[in-house]
Image 1 (tube, rainbow, N blue to C red):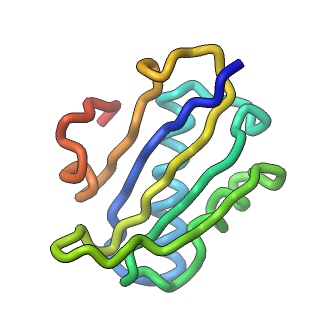
Image 2 (tube, rainbow, N blue to C red):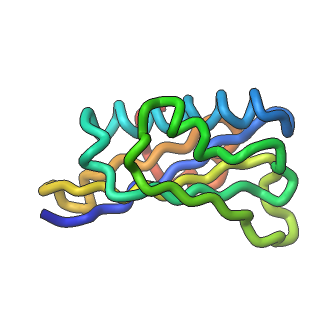
Amino acid sequence: MAVRGIRGAISVPTDTPEEILSATRELLLEILRTNQITEFDEIASIFFTTTPDLVGTFPAEAARALGMCHVPLLCASEIAVANRMPLCVRVLLHFNTEKPQREMVHVYLREAKKLRPDVQNAQ
């Protein structure tokens, strides 16, 4: 079985714990749905990043609230690149699967759709 990467991102309207957790939950649920991930044991790990303007809370808390208590989670801040999209949570989910990488569905929601216009996902 291989480990595959699934990317995603979502914009957040304001830097509050509630908005960060709500957006991260929305993103995770859409990644799980579109990639037909039904067991958290299939998830090897999740790496979250936020733009430097999001400091209200750790997005990994949304994964824990969904029940991902045994999935290794890590949060970090994105580098402060000029003209970057503000107020953005990004995810790299590592998934144990027999599927090839080309079948992984990457999910970009809200304003974050602009980050990867080349990616066709479930939106």
